[in-house]
Length: 149
Image (cartoon, rainbow, N blue to C red; front, side):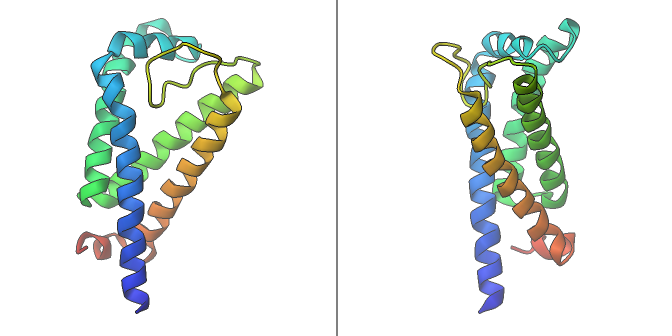
């Protein structure tokens, strides 16, 4: 019975995190110019890297979402997705520490309304926990054991 719970938990975690990455990528792929403006507002990357990042990052998110959702190359996808989640969380915290209240650009390219940085941090903390849960599940018994699911 314990083995089935572990597989069920892994599948649920994959569905959740994979869906998050896919949902986060859609509007950014459709509206790269608006996403580039959001990246620029973070004031972290040099201007020469903003457009390239706005084009590549959403496709990377979509690819990771598909890989996680379908369990393809799961060990690598789990590591890369956690690195991205950590980078996103760090960027939010960095801007909060600098006193910048900006739109995160996670699931929308719209910059209307008041940014909710505190909410973004709470939400991204949950995403990080989900990602760490996936990472733990994937590497607990070794990377090869998860590919059979």
